[in-house]
Length: 259
Image 1 (cartoon, rainbow, N blue to C red):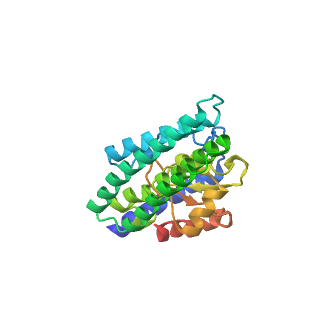
Image 2: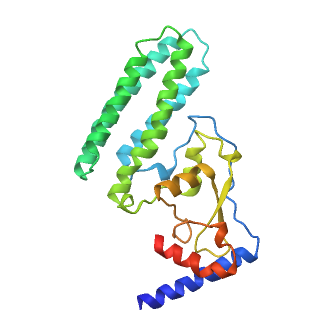
């Protein structure tokens, strides 16, 4: 029975792929203009499926927006506001880390100690920034960049691994984001609109995805993958070397070998 289902799925996949090659209906991922750094809005894909921790992450994202706004401030109260924001960031982080570390302990997260070390780094970094506020504009920019980098490197990456571990996505190397959201996160660092695009496909009829070069390289080097939001199947790189009818079977076999 399993063999029959597999052959049937391969047949469907081959049929859809053939249509992809014979017709030019391409479903492009429409990129919006690059956002200003630090102005990412909360997305439910950022959730780690713990409402309390999610709410704290939302508060942190608001702190980033406040820090960004402060970089544009020209008032006489800028130093006072900067000190208040720095103290607020440390207080919030300490409270958040306490709850997050307790949650990781409860689910048996294997990288808890490494995560704790990373938490201490943020407190240390902000504390060091507070020791040198002579150049207010420079200090404000440094504070904002510190929080922004923490969002990208920790909250949206290392914290997401907590949920990936709990749902076992980590075991199969599945990226816990949609293609659109993962690309938006990358766009905070690089101009993805100027990069070479790579074609990916799934089992949906006549559907093709454009993946930026940065994300393509990450997935190929790390052996990770994304899922289609519609058919729920992995996105597979459409190797140009297999783009002809003689290679339908080879591409189908490659698909089932990987996933």
